[in-house]
Length: 356
Image (cartoon, rainbow, N blue to C red; front, side, top):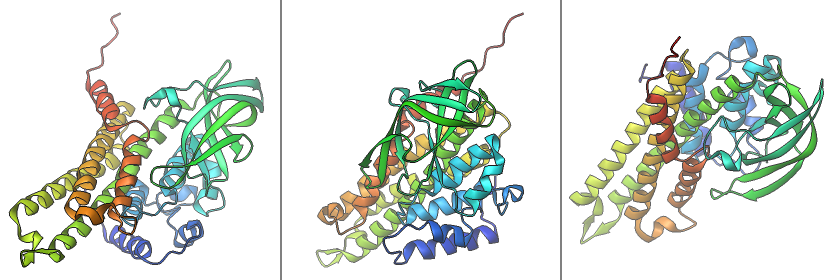
């Protein structure tokens, strides 16, 4: 692992940070993502990418999180792209140039964070399949044009299917962090399989681990900005004729926020490195640890950022409360921090060898 960014990664970070801090307007940022090459940064050159790997994706995700950018970069450019690299690599070039915007529909209400839980069923044969089930927690529907749906294909096993947004019933809603979420309702919905039938589980588990780690990178960016806002406020706000940042108790609280942030950042670096681990079990173990620690840190940094700001911290006009909403949504998505701690503990147990 290398904790020091390369010159190329630093240039990429500066580019995304400048854009995220600018007046971006109200429209979709996807054309800009494509124009700047951010959608292809994490993809291998053979798939139409720039070969920066998931390290480059983490840099972009962190800076988008710092700027509280709502567009689903991780969902499309990382999770869906990594899934298709294993299932249908010829489709990835469309993600790289921004003309293809798929999101994964895998989570189900009963799963409670278990990435292997799928009760959606597919019945059919050949290229004619019909899906029945429900998928929850979809984020990014405002930008997506395609859904990649996991389902158990009759007679085969876990398979990935494709259907266009609008081909099935969608219950849309605003998430707690004010993005567009939704629930997919499948009732004999026609869909086409992607990749070999019954062989989607390894690719889906890898995509989920990518989601845990790269969304943690987004949270780290948000935490860094909350820490900066809080520090600046403590050095500006005065009581008894002196900045409140001079008070030792508040300095200690700020130092604790910094420690939580840096521990989460270190786990993200470790998590990104583990995404290439040849052992799926070790990869998932570290991904669970990354999400768990980032969720804990985000809760601490967000809550203390609000408390140290006082009343202004919960106003609509001030950004700290908006970051706290994003941290709250992040902590629950794909299984809470507590669920990930349980997964980490289970994956850390030594595997028992079968006795001949």
